[in-house]
Length: 452
Figure (tube, one colour):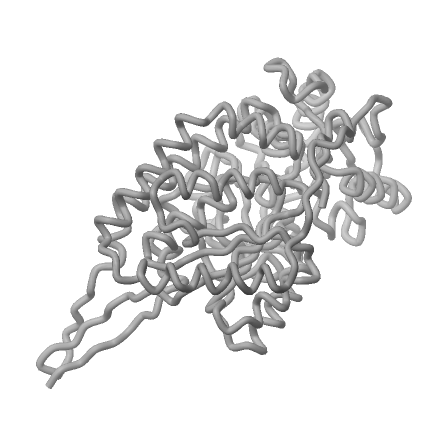
């Protein structure tokens, strides 16, 4: 299990995977701490979660440097990621008790109400692209709900996983309430099957989600999946084009395009297709590619060599299928996992960049004739995570948003996640929700009590 700097290809550290015996002992220890933790009050939990938020801010620069070193994110983006983790902790510390308070229901019984109780020890299988945010947005609500968590993080960001464990301990939580499992992917199934585990969440690929869901289903354990996306970015003829294209480039190139909710298919009405493409080309050509630690850098390295190979394969296959390369479409001749910002046009159904999730700085531009065709193309995907719609007519924007098959739609802004709003998708993008009052109730026993 190696952590390798994607900007330099230098080994940061090598980790020894835990044995099956070590994993079982950790699970037992976590369960023992959970038995005590579930009896804690919301106020006690909130104080510790708030303390964790403070530690994240205090150690922000250290955490951000670790994120950038392990997966190549621009340092300013890494800093923002850590700050967002602190924000989600404070949100659930402040609101968790209200979200999980007893709910009285008016029935023919003398008294009837619903309570929310923790399930127990949960397994979180998390990806490398947001190594802190993906974890904290699950930790904060679930520790507030009274659960315990074990984390199987991507092996390439093991340092981030252990740092999160350290912060949880520093905040004063029971020492084993949250633990990192340094294990390869082929050991995940055994962990899910362990009777101590009461539920599992996974953020990752569709293929990984299917494997985890199959095992969880056989074990009759609650499962939440946040999988890939091929988010449409629809541009109508009345869009504020300058703002629209600037946002389009940001939405496609943030984190070097390695974002599940980043805009991937740019569906543009033909009346504005030419100016849209001209502005996008100019902006993406001018992007500064370089060291992610430099504040002037706009495009850093991709996280791993295999991811670089995959995005290049998708580009080459699409060109072979008839797509036209406007800019980019090649690896950069420099040390590290760098790929040129790329725009493909003449993209049609069946091409790799149309059908598959593209995890890299590659924009697929699809020209359509009208609103009806735009909506058809937007929904013509196995994914359904997020979407963005651009029009000055907000009534039209809302109408189109209601007809897009996805978990989230943003009008005149890029798709993003917020503690207050539910996050998740449909179809091949998974099921269940994170964040907001919906997310905190995914892994609780919603118990009905009636008295007569």
